[in-house]
Image (tube, rainbow, N blue to C red; front, top):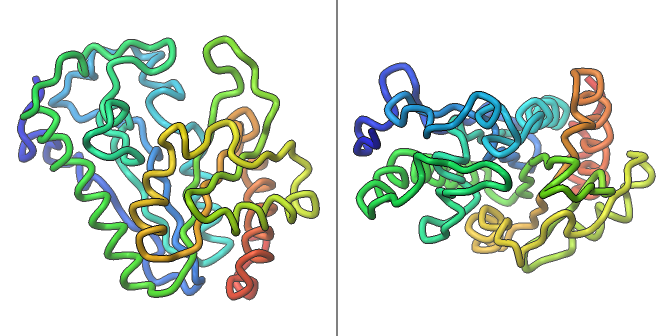
Length: 260
């Protein structure tokens, strides 16, 4: 069952997106588009096996906890999607095939095969628009600020190991990502690369383009390899380093950052 927009997210399952620490004082807005692997009951699990629903295909493992830790350290608002990216990937525009993929790496997604235009539109209304509108309102309320999106990636993709541990991605404006790349060795002993393991050419900077580039705001997309986010202590160490990097590169945030 696909459902229309009104029935797609059932009672007790919503909202599709939330903002945490809305009054945070830092001149930074954090975003985690792939924070949840929740699939609304109306979609019957998209036909996925439990292993697929728990995998990196359904969400960015560890990214929500990392984003929350950064929010606490920076005192920054955090916008979270509460629906799996296999239902709708909030880092993709509605016209992109990857917004509702029928295949994600090794995982087939039966519930996304042969979606009708009406079914796609229902997911846009139920998942993407609430997320997009909440983020827009949060940025408008904050005023001049820096947009930072928080993601994780799998150590092996399509059978190919990834050596990079921390990626810093940018859209049209590379300044913040480049500045953070230079600052990284002082804060985190991780193999750090610019535009890895993805880049704007892969279509992964939609949120940056839609919300930061369009407003003339500095922005960066952070990608952390998910085997480095295996427990609270590991997440805390990486959050400490990333918060210090952000504070060093976004000077007005420096007063708020620090280990918690």
